[in-house]
Length: 315
Image 1 (cartoon, rainbow, N blue to C red):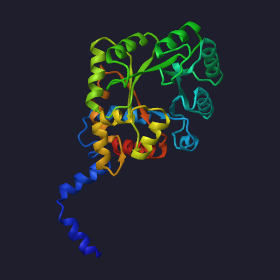
Image 2: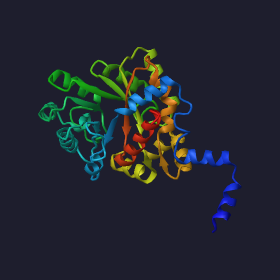
Image 3: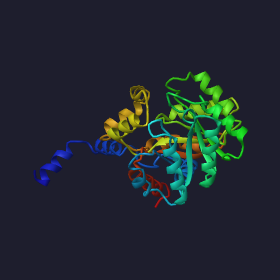
Image 4: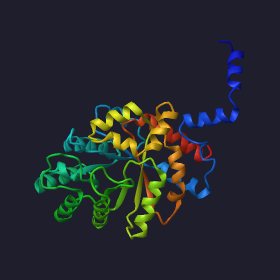
């Protein structure tokens, strides 16, 4: 096909439509175009030093090479890999200069003696941080949920001083919302911050934070956002890390699915972040960080982050 015929074909599509399609293709509106100065400044600050979540899978060391030097790195735990994989990867990353936040999954820790050993290993690795979750192990030991593990950690003493706990803007697959909220209230006495679990709906995230502040939960919040995600990779990792109901996940995140369909199967979180800009900038919300669910696609996620950060800075 000649260049002239290509030009004629393109000319049939109005320019405004072509621009809209291109913006949808990259998963965002024109970056920063509608951001007020406080939101732009807040996004710049949190994007400059986010927390990157890694999963202990085969490609993790290759992908960790793309992390910024000294980055904060959250290491997940899953029944398929066991707590040992989390501890081993955490120790290796900490030794390489990263600030590691290992996930301690309550249902994967057998008893208080096992817990004491886990905490000792963290201390030996120079790690003074942890993210405490209930977990999905089908055959738990002594600890059935995150709260029971937090209490045991407090009783043992000499554990991490910086402890995060999860919170759920769109609820949980099996735990009723009232029970989730009561657990969060109870965990607040032991925790340093809460992290919103994977959610692609800015309205749900904003409403959740506002509701918690209104009821007096003052824990600082890290907002969880997806990194650059490809559909096959996302679904494959979901199965491998033990997400039991991928269909429910997708049905509750229609925005995510629709953006994937219109972006060639690749999601970028720019649009989500810009809708969250005002709440990140709001001192009353007390948003202290971004937690980036990388799905172990660090290279593409870091390329996006660096590019968007440069745009926000006007570089």
